[in-house]
Length: 587
Image 1: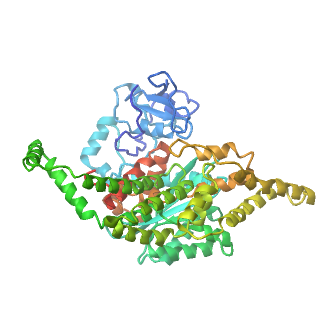
Image 2: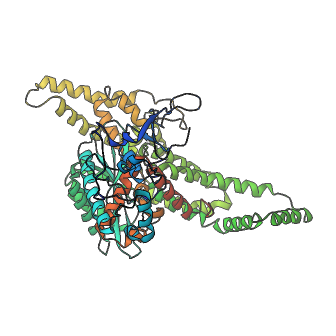
Image 3: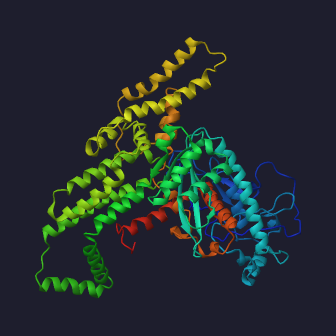
């Protein structure tokens, strides 16, 4: 079976407008227009089994009659990306029905994404592009101007924003935020705000909801006020749970202003609200450690790069080794192995923390304890003593105590419960009152459930007390059960587990859902930018700020629809890892 492609397939997406020549159309069909040009096909593997995604859900495929491309449909994929592919595909035929492709039954032409390939608007006015369009769609086609493209992008943005706003306002749980500041090549600052949430089907999602340009200076006051203003615009202030930010000093004052605006005197919410980006903390740890071995690493990399640049150099190198009777030093190799295994833990943790479509908060304590243990292995090694001291100092600066929200999230993992948190406390920390805080948070969800189940107007004292005792026992029952015996490396869908346990733990499952929504890194916000670098692209830098925001948000929303957000996050993750020198620049 041919490979499954996305709805863009690497092609430039261009918005088509009404050419003024209404096509001949037949009787209006029910359902999506795409089924006039797509055919549902068998979605079987080579062994005859049904194709499934990573969550075990069946994959449905449809084949485009024009180019033969095979796309997913149904479920979370929907059919709108089929319509966009139908409009953007450049492989046309001379069939008379070609005039119908990409058109509505009333003669209008679909608008689709111009933002995804980051092509400048002015491209539609280039002579070569206009010739290509006329060749593809016929000489009667009139390509739109860039102003029309821009106006329609803004119109699509407002329409899609309304849909997303309705979705966010109706999700059952909390919305957790990540945010980061970025700059354009014109030195303008942009604030990216990303919302993370779990829908009614217990699936984790993320969307870039705002990308405003901020005036200088980018103080904590300005950042905090801008974030709050955008949350008001989206009407989700009452749904905010946590915010994850990097370690910039201005973020602390921004968080203080947000706490005052969102929670006032709700001290429990204020205590759980702010988290530091764990991927950036690891980045700082590794940088401090590598300062002591980086010169050697660079020499090794440069030497290997030189030797492997040609077959002749490689043969000459081995010949020199033989003439000098050089032998491998076991001690040197042991040191290299120790360094490799030592930093591998940080590499694995960074990748794990940077996921956008799976839960990361519940694994924080587990990864934190692994890092603490690996640090202790070099504490008494003389050649690594300086490296250990610097890394331990940075570790204690940021992780001397387990962040309260992430400690509670670890307890909500049925594989860990209290065990991993207790291990963290035993390894690194003084005794803290996580157990008391756990019951304090649970009491909030318990009371909310009781108020919904038994209304104050018709509830007798006995009924309220019985409901209270039943709910109160949920947390005790959960903690009394032994942890699930599932290997850490095995696939385990924690959200699906809580979905199946909702009837047994109605209040606790709601609490778990909100704690498991928390992202431990800001990579989801940082990967929203061009080329996964910390700047807005040169094309978008020339646009008005509101257009830049529309394009950035639309790009993320369409990627979410197509299931390609992970690709952007992985691109940024490579940049992050290279900055620590864990990865070679040649990768």
